[in-house]
Image (cartoon, rainbow, N blue to C red; front, top):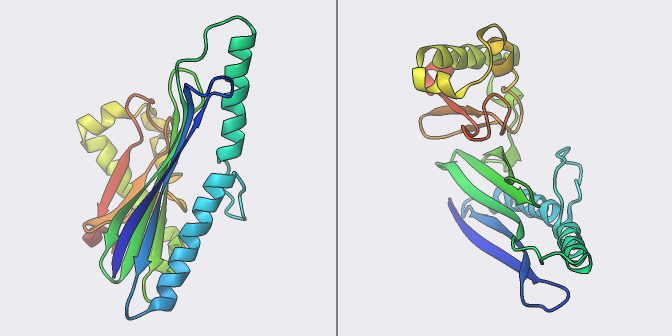
Length: 233
């Protein structure tokens, strides 16, 4: 199985003079090829294409994931802000609004494919917003895997993962410094990370990760926990 990547980059200039870039909008499109199972590859590629359509248009399409602004909505924001600044006598904005999606393959071994889609959006302010979602596929079928699909006892499996994360957080001083959750709330906070979209397979284990600000500051960034396969089995 092979996976290639195509980058799409769009830019928009200011609506008054066309000299200043006011928006950069870009996204990666991975393309999977499975010579022995093209039907499974088609299913995975269709999922990726719809995810990117959602990112571009801002429509949810039934994924249940909010937060996509979409190209046209961001362009309207950028143009309105630029026009407001100029027409009110202020200086034209010197910053560019942006939306950027990066795709990374965390595991591709012919059995499972783990895909990370990392979105960054900046529409003004001190910093932009980042969010990463993970998608794991059974290569033999092209189906998206859920936690229920990888263990017969999901509750026990989720508890095992959470306990491993708690142990790591308590025994790793560097990791502990990045987490701002009190010890009394640590268990419930880390258990909440065991959810769809926040886990993936790599070549060493199951990785669970937080969102920005969820258990750490923006400066510390999202935090990942790797649970080795011999522990997670």
